[in-house]
Image (cartoon, rainbow, N blue to C red; front, side, top):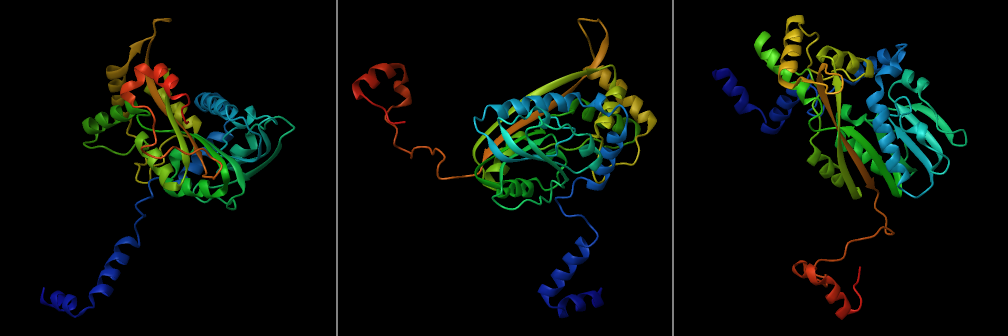
Amino acid sequence: MNILRKLVTNAKPKLFIRKLVTLKTANEPTPMTVFDRKAKIIQKQRAAIAEDSSVYEYIKEEVGYRLSDRLFDIKRQFNLVVDLGCGYGHVSKHISIDNVKELIMCDICQEILNKAKNPEPEVKVSKIVVDEEKLPFENDSIDLIISCLNLHWVNNLPSTFLQIKNSLKNDGVFLGAMLAGDTLFELRSSLQLAGIERDGGIAPRISPFVRLRDVGALMQSAGFSMLTLDTDELIIRYPSMLELMWDLKGMGENNAVLQRPLRLNKNTMFSAAAIYEKLYGNNDEDSDTKGIPATFQVLYMIGWKPDPSQPKPLSRGSGQISIKDIGELDKIVKNLGKIET
């Protein structure tokens, strides 16, 4: 004890603290490292090389269609567009020359890129392997970046948002969709209860999802303007929890948390399936068959890179009509003659 006290007393405080920090963090991941990205690539590769890989793409197909519908609402033809995490072309296959001249399709997995469907032939297309955490694009070079259901596996989401914003030209658009909030809450709670019952504790078997209210703050911090966020829930019915987990594996969406357990005990799995059916199971009114629901909460995002040409809100205190007089709006407008907007 005396020797340790002498070492601490004689050492320079700053150097001593720096050495302690270095020793502590040398063999530990950074606080942002939540997912095992290498494992996620392997999972995607296994899903992509399966002969029936298209069978499991129903959720991404639906979200891709809804996201492309939002693209069509932007009345502009984009010269250069990046589909970041394109998957099998869930958004790209809906793109036409009326909206996009040139498209770069990107994914972290080459096997998925090989199967990705192209847009109509008039659109110039190229495909490259890109890690969403390390974008290779030059600053101020892209008119539109699309991301469909891939950002929920990114470790450093603030950094990715900033890289996306920097890659866009002024008045460029980021259009994205990601799983968030209460996605798979039924499966998560069932596995947790089964883990407590069978294993004596809880293990991270389901990926954590970003909270809805945090995404707007992250995009605003990255420098996006004119943000638009909205959510949608897809509730899919399965015969049991086992079919749900099988389909998640087929999608390449199985667990990739860094500290995940290597296997799921068979007793724990069957216990979780029974808990899932007991807590959430119900009958299908049309077929009168039992099943379980699985909730996928999808967050849609639109953010613009700031530009002087964009509309700006009026300064505080410049309003001409009080909200309390909204019921007499016609009379007030008639008296004033003209309202500034």
